[in-house]
Amino acid sequence: SVLAPKIDELKLHNLYYNIEVPLIRVLATMEEEGVKVDADYLGKMSREMEGQINKITTDIYTEAGREFNINSTQQLSKILFEDLKLPTRGKTAKKTGYSTDVKVLEELAEIHDLPKLILEYRQLSKLKSTYIDAIPKLINKETGRVHTSFNQTIAATGRLSSTEPNLQNIPIRTEIGRQIRKAFIPRDENHLLLVADYSQVELRILAHITNDKTLINAFRNNEDIHARTAAEVYGADINNITPQMRRAAKTANFAIIYGVSAYGLSQQTELDLGQSKDFIETYLARYPGIKEYMDDSIKFARENGYVKTLLNRIRYLPEINSKNFQVRQFAERIAINTPIQGTAADMIKVAMITIHKKMKNMKSKMILQVHDELVFDMHNEESKKLQKIVRDGMEKAIKLKVPVVADIGVGPNWLEAK
DNA sequence: TCTACAGCTA
DNA sequence: ACGTAGCTGTAGAT
Ligand SMILES: Nc1ccn([C@H]2C[C@H](O)[C@@H](COP(=O)(O)OP(=O)(O)OP(=O)(O)O)O2)c(=O)n1
Ligand SMILES: [Mg+2]
Ligand SMILES: [Mn+2]
Image (cartoon, rainbow, N blue to C red):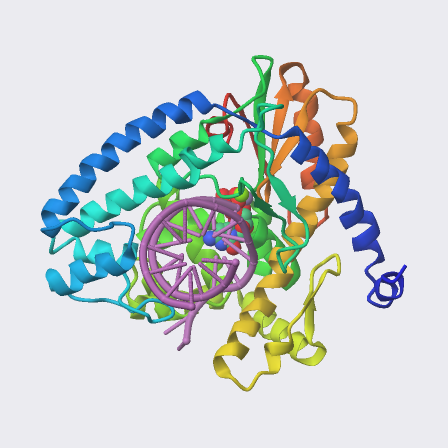
């Protein structure tokens, strides 16, 4: 074929023929299988939220002094910054105007009642329009199930993506979000959902690739780095970390290892600029292998024009030598991130192929992938057997210098299984 | 139909 | 100038 010489030259044979090609059929099966969604439950939620949104809308008009399209950032900007003369914060990305995003509104909420109402409105309308109302429309008439597309050739790192609907960004963070997740359910009363999610996956891969001794030891001692960072940021005991704290710390951990600036960290945490600078410095000093890896990966990209994952997935980075500072720095962060995120993608793809093969004669079905998570429609009588297949498949997909761990849960819906 | 903004997820 | 990887809904311009 026309691909053969290239595959040969770039040593892509294993990745292509043993992973990407076999994965095609796994994904096709998952898409065809689909997932059951409780449309009646979402319909009820929709009607409740409609009422709440209408109520907030009235309050917003009162506070604003007039009616306007709340969904319009332009119109909202005029109300806030011209009519009410509230102080502006940042400009928007393409600097067409003043930002009205959640960070800005949260600050303004301290000096006026309107921003708080806008925030409530935004939360409800986002969840209603994107999930509660949109997903039931995509229930297939013949199967009664929702069939996403898993796209294999979109994400530059080797991750999958999911469209129509995107089932890789179903809410989980807020209470209403969690109620939405409950709408994803097993096929019938003989089934439950089984969810398996890699523990701290990209940090473990980072430990392997960087060879950082402190990080490797931490994982060999079964430590939770996300919880540790939470304890440090919040000055709390590591045994008293709430899910919200761990979630914020997770964001901070990945931000740091993927090259966040002190300014950036100060924007996304409670830390001020000085504290953020200290925190990053302390972090990289504790794990010296990480800083070395960052420099090495950038150097490799400069010299070779590409970076690669553990299974030799290649991403070209022509902009790594750009004379434009901003363009070059962006490429440098990609050089740091892609080998890690891409290796995690390699790992779960191997797991999916292995697991799918072993499930050939079972009633349970693999139905969703969410980057480092697999969801199964599990027949009740296969619980023990499936659990073993999934755990082994995920934890043994690629052997690392540190333990690879999958957290597994079972439940009557996606929320309670996770 | 396209871009900008905003916000959801890993 | 400012962690990376995605997708989608709405406004507003074309
Ligand atoms: N803000 C985020 C969240 C996640 N990820 C990447 C790195 C994670 O390792 C991976 C999987 O996301 P999870 O939410 O499953 O996070 P972890 O696997 O790291 O932690 P946990 O042990 O909670 O599953 O996605 C990221 O780059 N940035
Ligand atoms: Mg996950
Ligand atoms: Mn995980």
